[in-house]
Amino acid sequence: MRVEQENVVTQDRNRVAIPEWVEDDGIAKMIGFELEQIGYNPVLFFFENNIPEDVDYLLTFGPYNRILPLWQNNARTALSRRPVVIHWNTEGMPDLRIPPKFVQLLAALRSKIGRMGRMRHSGSVFDHFVDSIRSASHIDQWFKRYRYHGDYEYACRKGWLHVLSDTSHIYSQIRSKIGLPTLYAPWGASQRWYEDLGLERDLDVLWMGTRGSERRSRILDQVFKELKLRGLNVYIGDDEENPFIFGEERTRYLNRAKITLNITRTWYDDNFSRFTMACPNRSLVVSEPVLPHCLEFKENVHYVSAKIEDLANTIVYYLEHEEERRQIVNNAYDLMMTDLRFEKSLRKMFAAARQQITRGPIKK
Image 1 (tube, rainbow, N blue to C red):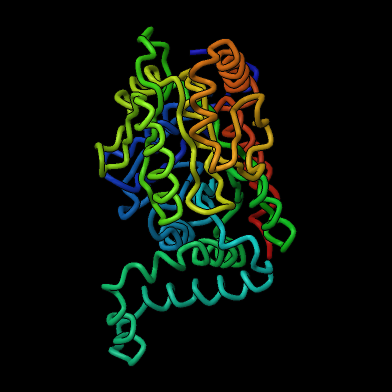
Image 2 (cartoon, helix red, strand yellow):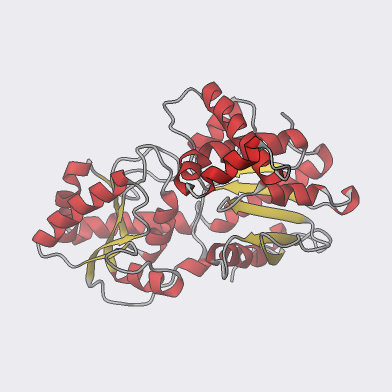
């Protein structure tokens, strides 16, 4: 694999601990692979276990579980041996129509409740209340975006977090404006997640991923009903109609799919990670209108944007106009191979981390 020698890190500060949020975590392994390509030495560990010793950096991402205990445990390490903490947020924020100051207030409260719940041991009324709602996991799901934001602010105040980055330019700007400096680091194309397999493009339209919300489920049903009535060959990998697809199987499907559909959970979500899987495999992304979370992607240049009610007709148009489809596919592929290589965001975050070694963690 290509490595730019002038940017390879020195061997004295190159060990990076990366938590696996689930068993056989494909994202953690992919990040580890990309770090190896630019000279780092990744060390993967399960997030509930101790952080490996003698690492220089702790790179967390997601989060896909509770992250504060991980950072708190890191802070207990002697200062001379404490890894620099980088967090790469890939999750959404609360509704963007809510004033940021109100979001901060609710986020701080949600984070505090979570911290109190983890510390409970006294048999108090609060303990019993937390236990009583534990089974109602949907409550936590409703407020988890507030928890993420509140946990980030708390970790910064405590000096546990050195570099906060976000895949969304919009979210990074919002957090920075309310006093939480956040680096924009888009999710790019990983060498582990694309390959030219030379397969026939025999699949007209692909959907991959959970439905995730009533909104997205309703739109998917509407669009695929229209597409099926037109006799198109579709695959819905939602773990309901068909199983999820991951790893090499996902790459095979993307090599077969002429078009990959993009629908977001909410009207404002960042869903560009889907683009960075489809585009390097030369599958055209057709999407509902989305906010500019990833500045590098331009609608109707690197992907096709259409109103929800026009998605089915737009898909049919690009299936019938192969040359127009190929031009956008090539534009997107070129973008992924240049400005949106995965390693570029890694280099950006670690450059910021090296600066924080002398300046200290984010201050609130």
